[in-house]
Image (cartoon, rainbow, N blue to C red; front, side, top):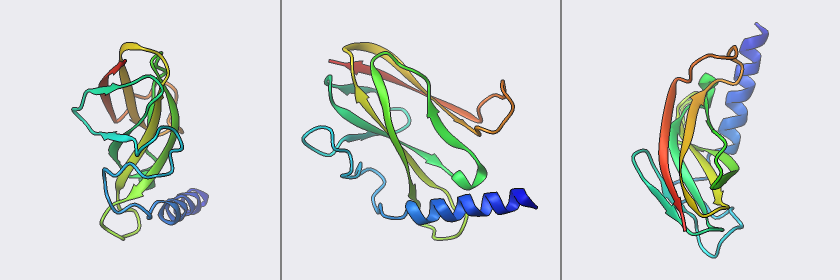
Length: 138
């Protein structure tokens, strides 16, 4: 019974804080870094940015399920922030997009790996999904 209350609280919290974005790929304006809105990348994209630039990766996500995207450590980019953007459905529990913001910190090429997982699963549990993004920082 307590678990239902926690899940409901999480759903209400996410619904309350993620509904301000209308566009899936506008990147938002709450970045602070760089002179313009960060470029938004999606599944299948290769990322090419200048050192010091920020960028966003937008992936389908539904936090009401307990899953969220997390990035593996990467020597060329560092994780800055994450926000959930509500999809077109206003239904409780409906999915949307998780936007992860990164900053390029070192020139070079690497692969940025993101895992869709539940942080409360036992250690060693495989992620539900993994996405790899080739990254070149110039």
